[in-house]
Length: 257
Image (cartoon, rainbow, N blue to C red; front, side, top):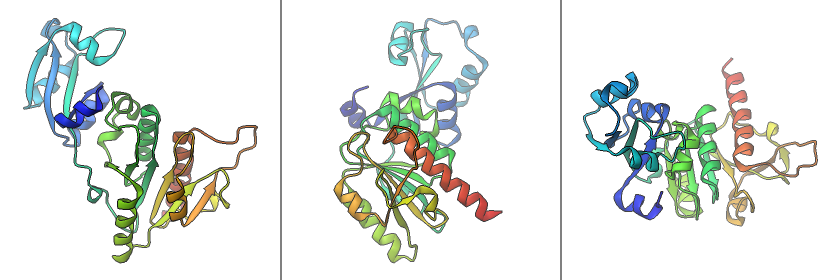
């Protein structure tokens, strides 16, 4: 759970049947599989036995006590933990084109929120997620858990600031794809349902407390709000992103009908 050490080693821990299965099915490089040395082989589930047999990576027996500590679970040690390789933070990993739908998370503070946002981006057909600025780490164990494996199903790229992303957008536009930058903001000029999400789009979601930075707001082609009827004036960042992504999916499905 130490970000600096994750970055230095170039690896992070993955736990859970679905996340490990998705990492393997998507060809994610697994450096090591850890298993509980205190458990008899016959006590392992069929999934655990088949995973151990199928993976050619190093397999290391670890004490049950250490497995429990690494798994951070009160109910007992996990059967398996995977040590996965960190991917390159390269914007070229994100597909571009006329169907492009990218998500920019501007300085998200909560690893859980970031993992939930990644899960929603995957569910609603996004091309990838870009995390900018001083932000939570998508490879933090809390983020990995909250993504429920979606981290391994679409590219997630960390970028130090908005500038490299805007340069990337300029290059995409120069290549003939008119990608639009749409920011979510409670004071946006139009409802999110009024945004044409059938066009190539980069959806921007701000920090949980401060919203979008001034630089991102200035870069937006449109600022869209989510209509609310109650006393709440804003939404959790991951929830706001999910609503906007659902609207995008709704429009794109309707356009194909």
